[in-house]
Length: 224
Image 1 (cartoon, rainbow, N blue to C red):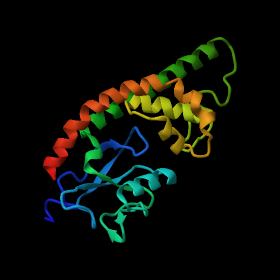
Image 2 (image 1 turned 90 degrees about the vertical axis):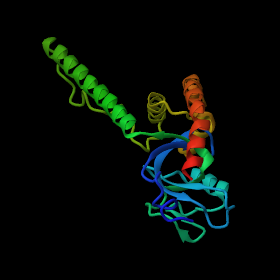
Image 3 (image 1 turned 30 degrees about the vertical axis):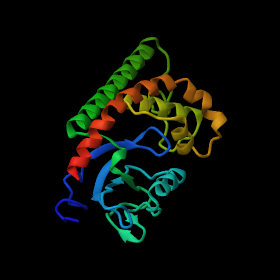
Image 4 (image 1 turned 180 degrees about the horizontal axis):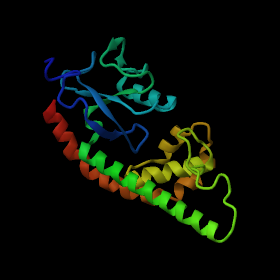
């Protein structure tokens, strides 16, 4: 294994990527390592990914089973440390699971759009406050707060609905299994209707993602 080609010095390290989830749909993370895993075939290449948040236990176990290792989820595979990562946030995946490399320009564009949305919301709140003041009505103490925005771990109906809308806006594809894995404390029948109401949106996103899959796979094979 060439040190300049594989491992933590591979040219793909640092890229933000979208990749297939073992339960369907896709996830996003940063490439931390690229190369061969001990005990795997010589021609097989794998990617070490660091995710932005802790991975639900059920999902971690599925990824570990798929590659027969990496249960620690900290960059370790079968006792060998391949890259550094906070516990619970690391995965090893086959290179064929890669879908798309997300460029810095694309990330900046998404941040710019999000900033515009936030500014528009603030302007709308300000206008409504002015209208209430002109009408001589008292503005509630909690008016304009972000109470309607779900916390990352909010498993209420409102929180789940907010998560689904956020993923749709980002253009991600989320399956019902993904949703059940993320919200393990909720029974599938409790959240089925919420997912069914937005499933057509995710199907549109999936069609766009599939178009990238083969092309990205070939690029990654060449990079290895």
